[in-house]
Amino acid sequence: MEVIRFDGALGGDVSLIARWAILEGKERKVVLARKSTIIEPSGTQGYEAMVAAGSRALEKLSREIAKAIKTLSQ
Image 1 (cartoon, helix red, strand yellow):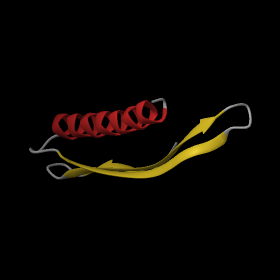
Image 2 (tube, rainbow, N blue to C red):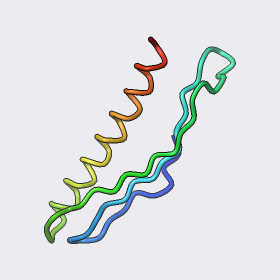
Image 3 (cartoon, rainbow, N blue to C red):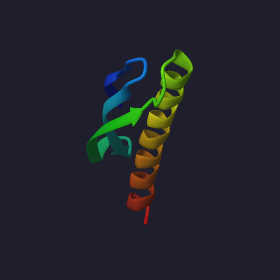
Image 4 (cartoon, rainbow, N blue to C red):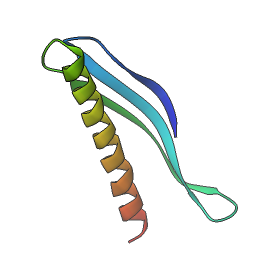
């Protein structure tokens, strides 16, 4: 995974942009490559809200990757 952007503004949105790939075997053959763009609103002013929005963005990215792994394993 390569995180291209992960930032936000107080009272604004948190942006998470990442390129990621699922590799297979010792040869590390790429079986799936994606770029994810996730925008999560913080809702209110303050660092606590911004950190919570960042956490939600990471959760969404994690779920996206998990779903891709599950789809490949079926």
